[in-house]
Length: 382
Image 1 (cartoon, rainbow, N blue to C red):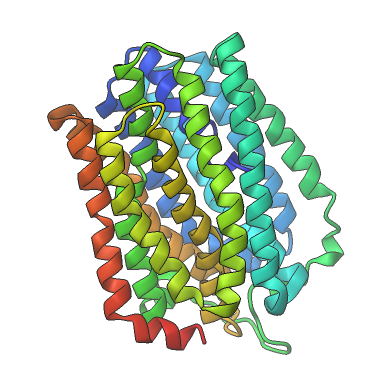
Image 2 (image 1 turned 90 degrees about the vertical axis):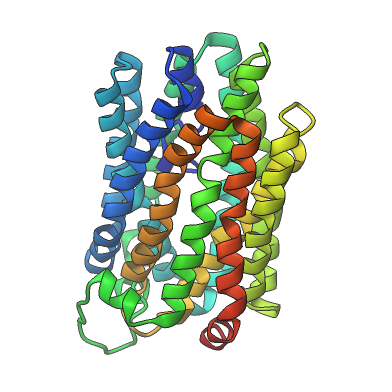
């Protein structure tokens, strides 16, 4: 499944740049998709909490992602591309909580941290293979081959999900409900506002992703404008380096969460972004790609394990785990969805180097929140 939630991901920017789009328009169309995904994450979480057909919604979302990505090949009209990104984002908003719910339903709360760590390690490994193949096929046969590959992986993802026995998923455990507890409906906003640790986590992630969301696509665009080499290969390398790092960091996050707690894991992930922005500002090159994307891998790899684990821990026993995941993802998505547009237009105005430093500085908000409310987070995750 790997990067199914994002469709063709960072390759979209390069594809549209080749069709004479500027950085501002590319960022704007990504933001449109991001906003749609953000709006749908709470309803998606509520749906996954309520439904006993979690596998079906993963299959349906995968099919929508495949079709939406294919539409971009037919036309590069702004509104068609925007619609495609909206559909991909909505589908992706369902897949995330569905996989978390399926995992929680199979291994229960006790085994979730460990299994989620393994899930994320394999997820990042899949991204490595997918990105490497995308880079090679894009170089060899052009950008349409990347879209075709995404479709093939989507079909394989559907087959994989259908191989999970439906009876293996405990629907009450999948939503973090105690044995014998009745239905307890609540809105995602209500869950978020009534839980201070969850609200702090969501706000910290929003600051982080406001800076992080645009970093990779803009770094790819900066390289594409600076050098005449193959852009798809460069973007593929950025993803491969980050994802290889994430394989290691997701497994480390699994171990660290058990021994040191979630607070430290997420604190390290927040610190990685300002350093990454500073390096990106001065090293747009085939050498700079390594430290920039290793730091991306550290931040994203740690969060991929720690965020779902912390939310599941905070809301254990409430029966609201997936709607809580959706609420956190919504606030996080608020930052991520505006990042490409903000970053794209800033880059148009003052250049890429200054933009990377500004994007990296947004994580200072995350760090301050995490330090000021450290006791609240530590107590909720103990």
